[in-house]
Image 1 (cartoon, rainbow, N blue to C red):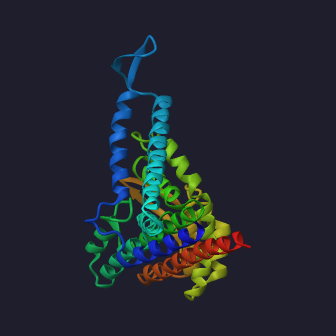
Image 2: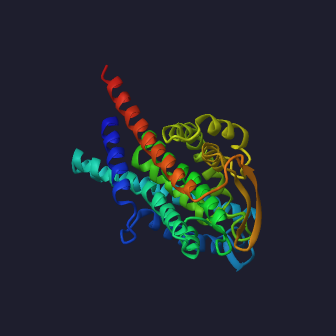
Image 3: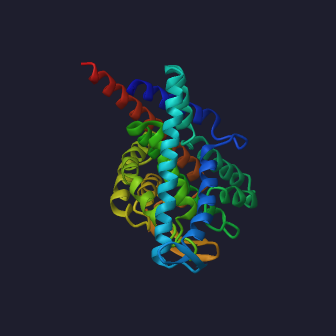
Length: 339
C-alpha cells in the first residue's frame, strides 16, 4: 500500500512538472467549483426561508449571521465530504480493476491537486513581460494569479506582488497537496483541494461572504497549518541550495512569519523575503479597497525583476524536496512493516 502510494506521488509530481494543467482538460477542481456555485445558490434560498410550525416555508427573509454561518457549514461539509467519498469510490474502482489501474487512477487524482508547473509558468510570463518592458502585458499576466488590482502597478509593485503569490502558493499548491497525499492518499488530498477551492470562492471577508464563508476560511486555515510549518523548513533549505540566504530566511520567518493576516501565508512569504533580502507587504488594492498589510522582511536589497526568477527557483527546489521527502518516508514505512 505505502509503496503504491509512493509510486502514485512520483508519477503525479512528474506529470505536473511535464504538462501542468491544460486548459482544455476537464479538471476535477473546476467541477468542485461548479458544485460550490450550485450549492451556494440552493443553500442561500433554503436558509433564507422563514418557517412556522416547524417546517412550513412562508416567505424568504434576509438570513442573519447564524443562518448564514450554518449555511456555510453545510456547504463546506457537503463539498468536502462529497469530494472525499466520491474519490474513495474512484480509487476503489481502480483497485478492483487491478493493481496497475489502482496506481494509475491514484496518480492521476493526485496530479490534479498539484500546481507547480502552472504557478511557475504564470510567474515566468510576468517575468518575461517585465524584462521586455511590456508593463501592460505584465499587469495582465499578474492579474491571472493574484486577487489584487493590477492596473496601476509599476514595475517594482508588479515584481513584489508576483514574488508574494509565488511564495504563498507554494504551500497550498505544492507542499500541502503532497503532505495530504502522503498521509491519506488520493481521497484525502482531493478533500484538501475541495477545502482550498471553497476558501478561494467563498472565504472572503466582504458583505456577501463574511458569514457564509466563515467555516470554509477557518477550515482552510486549519488544514494549511502543518504544511505551512513544513514550508518553513523546505523553503530556507531550498534557498540555501539555490545560493540564497538560509539563515536570513529562518530569522525572517521567526520575526515576521506571524505578521500576515493569515496564520499561514506569512510564513512562506517571510521565508522567501528573507532568502532574497527584500521587503514584501505594504499597500495593496483589492476591488478598489485599499488594504495596508504589515511589512515582511528587510529592504536590504531593492526589489528587482530578477527576484521573480529567484523565487521560482527556490519554490521549484522546494517542490522537489517535498515530493522526495514524502516518497522516501512512504518507502521507509513500507520497509519497516516487513521487518
